[in-house]
Image (cartoon, rainbow, N blue to C red):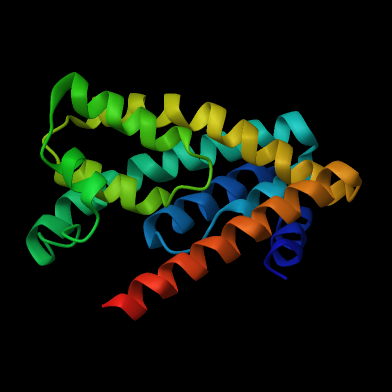
Amino acid sequence: MAQDIVLEWLQSAGALAIIISIIINIVISILAIIPSVFLTAANITFFGFWQGTVISFLGESVGAIVSFYLYRMGVKTFAPNILDRYKPLRKLQNTSGWEAFYLIVAFRLLPFAPSGLVTLAGSLSSMSFVSFALASSIGKIPALLIEATSVYYVLEWNWVGQVILMIFFIIVVGYLIKRRKRVDRS
């Protein structure tokens, strides 16, 4: 399991464990297809709830900022229409100023929203680097607290963790059924 591999890396890193965790988060953010929940779980297990949550927040924030910069440099050149099928993110792509700032915060508030797509949309917008960094980091605070709390209770495997996992399972199955119906209609 990915969490176990990360835990081994953190244990062997000693004093560099925090830096290793942040670097892993940066790589996850750049790749944009790997969920970071396993890293949050590893951080909470290794560092404890609060310190693990703060390290996860720092890693996700720095990862989003690095990704924004890299995406802005490359995506506009190689795939400028990549978000055409994501209507809410297209709106972000076409906004600027405070509206873009608030949209980034709003998208980040959703704990299991595809972070890479939000970063990609922000990078394709005209919002500034600093504005994106602030909005993204502010929005990640409550989302990461929800994620960390959920992960903590699932790791504890008490009734709260079991309920959280069941709700997540129902949401995923519901999404897959809805998506299948949409595909069948096409």
